[in-house]
Image (tube, rainbow, N blue to C red; front, side, top):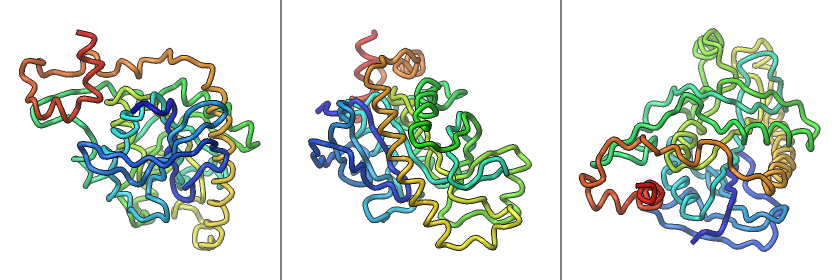
Length: 292
């Protein structure tokens, strides 16, 4: 089924990539259910790309309802080796202004109801991936360079705090996150990063700042209209950035360690793998089996 080299996950407002050519809509069933929506596959800058609207077209799924495992497993089935994820975020620090782009290199988990969507493993096969550096540094560098094509201000590095949602933070929570040194806040990218690592897919986040979180003195003066306007501008910028990133990646081979993340990570001996679980995880275990 391999039909794409690069996957793009679009966040709030980013439901399509108008520059895609030779478009085909692909619906995929996975052992973990159906993804958020049909994939839109096509050619972008000469590269086969699979685009997925994270919340479904029309924004129908809350962050806690997202089928993270199905989304990433489907990417694996499509042959994707790199995932570029766009995500709207709030700023927790003065230096990250609305319309800025942040390329985080760390995540902090504040979710509570997603344990079943945070790993492919279990049911008789145990794996513990290395996650000290949760995003692909090489892919993050490409995204940061690609921001130049959109003429936006970009910040390389920082910590993305992933909250449960769907309500936004209280002011007390926001102040605590700031005191912890968190940089931006969102509701989706941590699970994607974990699962991509387990699937041995490179992953990086383009965090699109729409507003300051509620800690900011001017927060109450910000209207919904202003946030939506910033979101629309960010979406247009993100489309330019993603296109440029794909162009740069077209001539780069993977030299990172993401593609061998499961090496030595699976603690359960193969002869003890339950057949049903091994079948369920076939797409991500076949590389491990070939190394034996």
